Image (cartoon, rainbow, N blue to C red; front, side, top):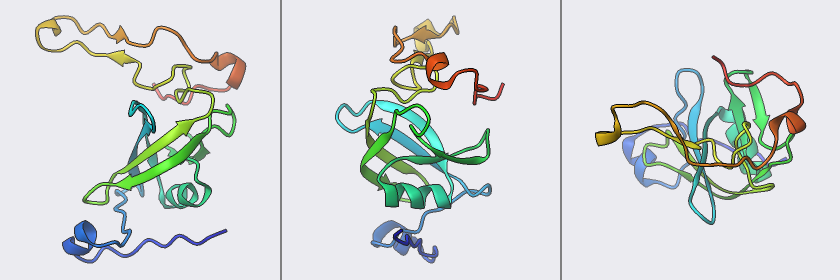
Length: 157
């Protein structure tokens, strides 16, 4: 397996203007990741990676996240078949956030069964007198019970 090396963060110029990959992981060793559909630009999900997950993602060309609820690496689609194939990886100017542009095998990224994890909207402005969420996606792409069985829901309450 190829070795991925992250540079030590030395200067603002190095971080913002050089070609050196020097990601900034937070106090828990994580970096946030925004994942979008490569063709449509639709936001599919937001997750986190630790150093190992980012390195594996770079090497495999498939999204590997760090599950905070399970405290383990999570190769997206390994169980469900809904693999996120990387088309492009970007890092922001501070190198403290990653953007994955992916092609999703099976057409969904959300463990609840919707295409996107952002399947509801929150009313705002003149409509903010109610906080009732509106479902923007009407149909699920897959049935989570058929895919995951009775596995515990990864969402912490």
